[in-house]
Length: 61
Image (cartoon, rainbow, N blue to C red; front, top):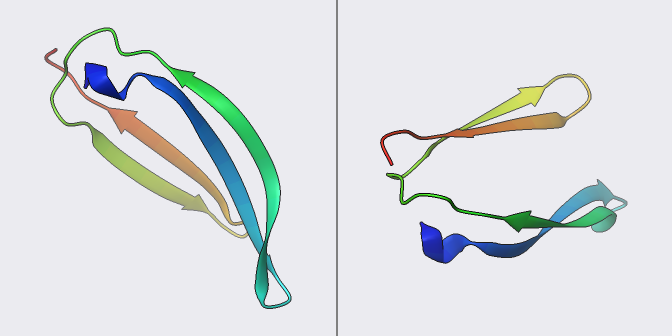
C-alpha cells in the first residue's frame, strides 16, 4: 500500500544464554510506486546457519 512508504528498522536478534542480544540494526527506506494487491511472502531458512531469505512479490498494480 502507498501508506506503507517510509523508514523502517531491520533488527537481527540472537538468542544467547537465556536472552536475546541485538546482532544488527539498520534502517531501510521503503518506496511504494503503485498500489499493488497484497504480496506473497515466502520465507526460506538456509540450514545449518539459521540464515533466512525472505522473498516478497506481487503483480497487477
